[in-house]
Image 1 (cartoon, rainbow, N blue to C red):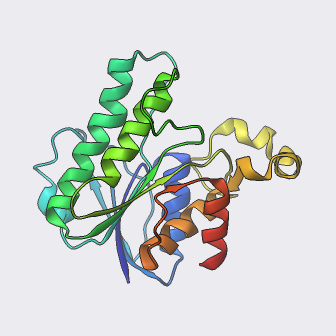
Image 2: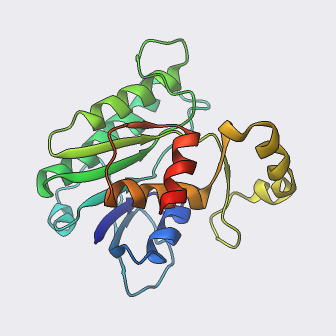
Amino acid sequence: MINVIITGSTGMVGEGVLYECLNSPEVESVLVVNRRTCGYDHPKLKEILHKDFFELSPISDQMIGYNACFFCLGVTSLGKKEAEYTKFTYDLTLNFCKTIAERNKDITVCYVSGAGTDSSESGKLMWARVKGKTENDIISLPNVNGYAFRPGIIKPTKGLKFTQSGYKYFMWLFPVIKFFSPKGFCTLREIGLSMIEVTSRPIEKRHLEVSDIISLAAQN
């Protein structure tokens, strides 16, 4: 059974992953760590509200006893210089993952990255380099079974409250997008199900593109 920590559940991707976990028979318990409440009430669910993700010592003992972390917290690179983006993408993420890895042996970490991420860490796109380093260093952490999820265009799960408002104007386009770009498109449900799948049945591949996400979700 999966006992999972989820970050970013007050965002669209994190909420969608939380929704799949709460409805999955393979998930026994869920701990969400947020700066503000996700507003969900469920027998499986526990929530910790914590403002400073760079200082986790006050809550670290509450994150013991878990075998998975679905890290869905992230910020946009728009308007940010590399140092600032690195702080909130690389430094914050690695601090969180190191903390839980020190307290939970052999934990699976599923990190939401993005299509086009640069594993070489040396390309021209700043965000892709930073995401690539974040992926690589999570996968290299001791006591961690790490996966980098690289979704492209994501279809949200209908009815969830943190879906970005602009999506309602484009929902009708998703079948067209999928027809013309099947390898660049997946659903939020597929992301959640594929995370559950690799936690329950680990695979060798570590960088998961859209086609991998869809295939894994179909197995769950």
